[in-house]
Each structure stands twice: as structure tokens, then as C-alpha cells.
Amino acid sequence: MLGTAVEYQPLLHKRSRSGIPTKKLFWAVCAVGIGGAFQYGYNLSVINAPTTHVQKFINETWYSRYHSQLHEDLLTLIWSVIASVFTVGGLVGTFIGGHAAVKLGRKQTLLVNNVVAILAALFMGVARPAGLFELLIVGRFLIGMNAGVGMCVQPLYLGEIAPKKIRGITSVSINVFLTVGILSGQIIGLREVLGGENSWPLLLSSCAIPALIQLMALPCFPESPRYLLIDKKNEYQCQKALKSFYGVHHYQMEMDDIQKESNALNGEKQKKILELFFDRSVKWQLITIIVTNIGQQLCGINAIYFYAEYVFKKSGIPIEKIPYVTLGTGVCECITAMTCGLLIDRAGRRLLIIGGYSLMALFCILLTVTLTFQESYPWVPYFSMSAILAFILSFGLGPGGVTNTLTAELFTQSSRTGAFIIGGSVNWISFFVIGMVFPFIVNGLNQYCFLFFFVMCILIAGFIYTIVPETKNKSFLDIKDDFQKLNYGQSYKSSHQVEDSIDLDETM
Image 1: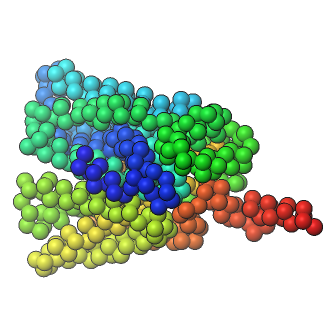
Image 2: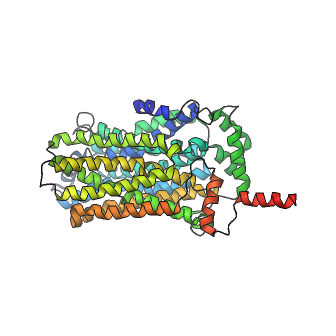
């Protein structure tokens, strides 16, 4: 983890191009990321390694209680519940995190959230000694809830503390920590580390470590300045927070930007979820985050991981070596997440996300062809492996890195928390649904399932190309003005146009 932080540090220099010192901002990103996206990615991947050992434990526990063998179908159901209850907890956590972020603040919510992770680690750690596999279900639900809160509040905090010049790279750090979490879970889950038969309780309870690190590190950083001024009306604390992040000589520009947004909102309270659905001023912003969050799950990334093991076997890789080869996919994701961070504030959001989906559509076609002729020639599986790695690279470069950034940028303060609740809920529900439906899609269509994902990638890329404007280097109010032309039509006048017309009337 420390090695990755060092690698990522050049992305946020001590002094950004805008002249604002960003050293403390970098460490704030790390402190938030370790207990947010890292925790989510880690617990997403770490459950895969001990599958056989946990199922054996469930069988033994059942026999000691009832002196009979557990039916295979019931064993599969119990294991499925243990694995998938994580997504249910994530959905619950998204709603809790959104409301807590308004009442307690972004920073305080993230700190309290670590208590949930420690409780989850405790339940999963004592499940085997206590002979209660039900504690694994409780623990997985709690760590899912922790992930839901973290993935809702972390983007809020990061989007609000970063200046617009580097807001993209700061938001992309979410994907960096997520992919590092996935890779860390894969490494820790190896049988030589904590993936053995006797060490799996330690593996599942190791989620307490990131929580403890965040509990020690995050108090060193202030609350979100935007939250302090716009939501809490505390100008002094807002100035203090900005000075802490950027220094006494560089905070004023950001202070002016926050005050401008506060004046534009004119004391407008936080909008509830239902209010957002009926608010015409955020109609297309809301449609955009729903489409992009669904797209993350329906683009085929889950299918890629499903077929990866099959392709590796066909390529002649021994079964016992496949977990080590799979680490290559995790490394690919980390590389592209960091690359996206380097490019997002230069190339822009539209180019990366449209290009990412377009490349994924191309590799869906290539995978369909190579999987169809997998048995025909000995060299075909190697093309399949290349297509899988290229698909993962394309996902990390575009949808994986940019989606959270868009959600943070498309809304002003009064709508942002509700938007993250909606976007997060859509993502978790889509995650759960695709997990339930995907096996049937594969069984019914086999390799032709990638044609379905091809269509989805093309449709989402077309939607973004048609609807979503570029948000690079724009204030939240400027982005809002861009969307109001869609929400209200050509008759809409932006705040800049209104100011210009007022000035013109005064001169006449």
C-alpha cells in the first residue's frame, strides 16, 4: 500500500500548475482512500480465496449441530448469501452515508464508519472459534455497509476539497485506491499468505487494519470547506480549512469560488432524493449518473473476470498457477487507474469515458470471435488473453476512473449528496442484479454474451457523446449552466448571460 502511495504521489505535486500547494491535499486523499475505496476493493476480492475452506467450515458446523451432512444445494445457498450480502450492506450503507454526511459532516461520517468495519472484522474473526457460520453473514453485511458509506462519502469529500484545476485527478484517486484494494486482496488471499485452511479467519478479519489506519490519519485533516460554508454557514471554519489545505497565500481563490456557489444557492437546503427526481433543473444530470453507474456493471467487466480463468486454462497455464496469473489483471487495473489520473485533467472526461467504452466494444467483438474458435488453433487462447487484458485496461482508463468524477462534478452543493445516494444505490443494485442474472446469461449465450455487452458499451458511449458536456476546468456553476440548456431548452439564460444583460441595461 505504501509503495502504491509513493507511485501515485507524483500525480499530485507539492505545487500544482495553478500554483496551489497540494502536499497536504495528497495526504488527505490517502487518508480518505485507505478507509473508503481501498476497503471496498479489498473486501470485494478477498472473499474469493477462502471459498473452499469456508464451505468446509460450514459443513463441519452443520454436522456438529445436526449430525447429518449438509445438502449441496443448501451449502451453495449459504455460501451465496455470505458472498452476496455484501452488496445488500453496500446499498444500506449508501443511504446511511448520504444522510450522515449532511448531519455529521463528511469527515465525521468517515471516522464513525470505521467502527462498523472493526465490528465486521470481529464477527468474521470469531465465527470459526465460536462455530457459528451465521457470524460470517453478519460480518459481510457490516463490511458491505462500511463500503457503501465509504463509496458514497469519500467522493463527496474529495470533490469538495479539490480545486477545479486538479479536481479530476483527485476524484480518480478513488479508482486508484479501489484497484489497489482489489490487488491487495488477491495477494493477501494467496495460500502462502493468509489464504490457507487455518488462516482464513485472519484473512476475513484483516479489514480492521485499513479502518485503524484511517482512524489514526484522518483526524489530521479538516472538514470539507464547502460543507462548512454552504451547509453549516461557518465562514471562519471554512477559511481555516482552506488555509490548512492550500496555505494562507493560496486559499482566497477557492474561498471566492465557494462563496459564489453559496450566493447562487441563496440558502437553498439539501434536496431530498424524491425532490431530485422531480426537479427539472437536474433532470439530465440525474439521467447521466444513472446511465453511467448502470453502465459500470452492464459493460461486461464481470463477464471478463468470469472467462479469465477459462481462457488461462485453455492457454496451458496449470490450475494451481492461475491465482498468480490473475494478479496480472489486478496490476492492469492499477496501471490504468493511475494513467487515468495523469490524463483526466489534460485530455478531459469526455474523451476518456467515450474512448474507454468504444475500445471495450471493440474488444467484445474480438473476444466473441476468439472464444468461438478457442479450440480451433493453439494460438487463439493467447489472443483471448490479450483481449481480456486490453478490455480491463480500457475499463480502467475510461468508465472505471471517470464515473465517480462525473457524479461529483455535475451537481451543486444542495443536490450533490442526494445524487451520490442515487448513483451509489443504482450501482449497488446493478451489481447485485448482474451477479444474480449473469450466470444465466452465460449459460444461455455462452461466448455470445459479449455481443450483449458490445451493444451496451456502444449505447452508453453514444449517450455520453450526445448529452454530457466537458467538465474539465469548470466550476460547479459553469457545469450547471451547461446542463440547463438541456433541461430548459435554448430559451434558458445562464447566470453569466443574466449578469451581462443587467450590465448592458445599466449602461443604457
